[in-house]
Length: 458
Image (cartoon, rainbow, N blue to C red; front, side):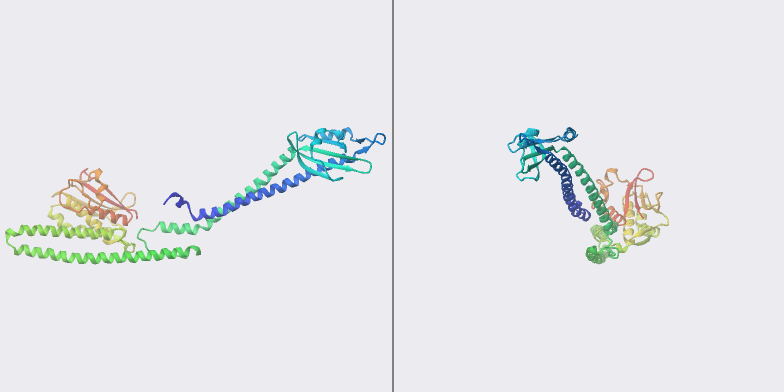
């Protein structure tokens, strides 16, 4: 499967569906808090600016002699007004004819109030600088004048930046904490599914026993029931295949044995000059019987035919003696010294499969060992604590470059003398795989021959 498909886990989907709304909520919360705080801070600054413009308006008075407007601003007050350490604060007072009474004439270009005796606050530009202005149109029976006070917005911008930091980081911490809680909550909630996955992963390839539903969350039980139904179907299919292979083996052995018997009887009844042809037929019949037996054994030991329910404790010492005894006649016929060194060990597995493995190992050793040679079969527990089965001979051995290839079906080392099917070691590998064992090929104790060892993990 592609990496993206592997990454679409239930945990990731849940975190994705939860985290994105939380992040959107963070953005909305930050914007809302920021605007609210900036509005409150702006109101405070506007209140101070409005108080200033009103205070200036209260200092207006008219000279009765020349009817001019005057502003009574003490020097100390004027100094305080202009002494802002951050922003530039300027003001202007002018009459109805735009005559500047006091202040900075540059402010004449700012927007003017249209409603009398009311403070008007608004944003404006002064010398290409953004300012906040407060204007007041003072109107009474004796005089009319306009007061405008403007200040740059540096304090407001700094306050906005501080407010942004104060609103963003707490909200971010809150959302991060929520995401962490969600992450660990999802992990904790999905632990039963992880445990279910581990139980399935630890199963052998042929373990079709049903999964226990007791420890599975309710949402996953339909999946577990479907898996159990699937494994039940596979178990029944495997049993049907085993039954078919067993019946096929029985049905094939009977006519082949009958054919060999009839050929033996015909050889005795025919004249001497016709017997060589019968012997060729006997050899071919023997090879056919052996090949058929190995093909059926390979099919029964393969992952498609083997059943985990067939596994039980097997005494390897007695099984080794039994397999070696069955092939003792073949060894004696070639003058081969067949010995065995059996230690008292047990293996959890299928008895008939393990016997088939031993029979193929011993038969291979006898077949390729020259007449008068030696074959030794061993079982026991190695230095690493693992149970092992080993067959050693003093035959031609297997070259290192061929040791991985000989486990392939129907493969024979080039130049090998004698007839063979190339299935013996393939069966050994299949049986070893079904039992979680490892097969190693090495040289004999004297540096010649072959030593094939099977190490069981349990």
